[in-house]
Image 1 (cartoon, rainbow, N blue to C red):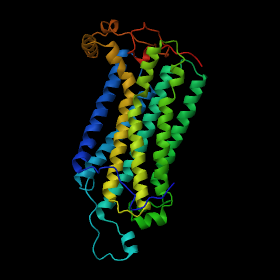
Image 2: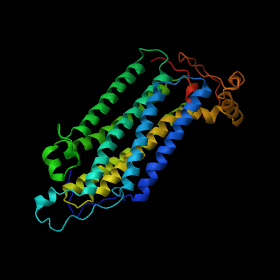
Image 3: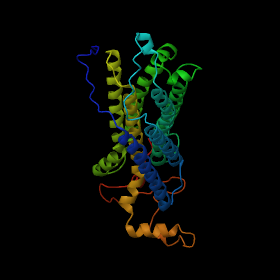
Image 4: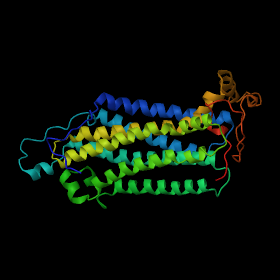
Length: 357
């Protein structure tokens, strides 16, 4: 692979400004909150228990809200969406420039430190939520091959999340201050700070692909019409939107790394902000996509009249017996599935009767 040079290097991304930072910091967490709220509303009208997949998505939501708060704080403090201030003119030697750190960059790197911990919590929680959702749908009994594969994947995702949280906190050993120190301090004291980021974006993309593709072989072994198999596969592949953002973030990181190797002067504050912006977009899309299979019930089995009845049934003075006739639970408390009539290609995932593998 050829090494990038200053003449051949191209940075194909546009930096984000303060308005974009504030917009994503406010809008995406609000949208995610509403989506998760709809997820729990769907559980209530289905008469289904709230499971591990639901509580894990709540943990992911809290992390997304924290990430959005980091953007709001960074924008208000004037360190996100703005260029790095020009270094003092009295810095003349290479070492002075290498070990100089602007106060705005220090604050931005402190925000990035907290942000990345929240980011890993969000990554892990959302991935685990999706896998537990697979178990809720596709594992009617323990000990099947798919159950074992899901269990192994859960362990891998948990250890992956924990490992990168520790690498984010301790890339410089027991020292924390170099995380927001100068480039010279980081190169001297933090041997894995740059390689760990590259490992994170690559491994995150690989895990995303694995988690999204995991249930497809099982879906195509179900006793369903080809149209329904395509419909269910399409619902499960909604997470591809988050994979697209993950790929974009990987390309961004590679371009920034090539620019550093080629000696290109890349604006530190703007490039860090851009990377964080894409990671929040990726996490937000992943959370939304992970909830859509559950929310598909609202679109395929729920009319406005039923919505009114269900809302009324949640009121303290209203009997729940009337609304229970409108909404059938598609599986009982022990997660036994009931096969419903084929209603076309658009179906809710909870209508599936799974088979052991």
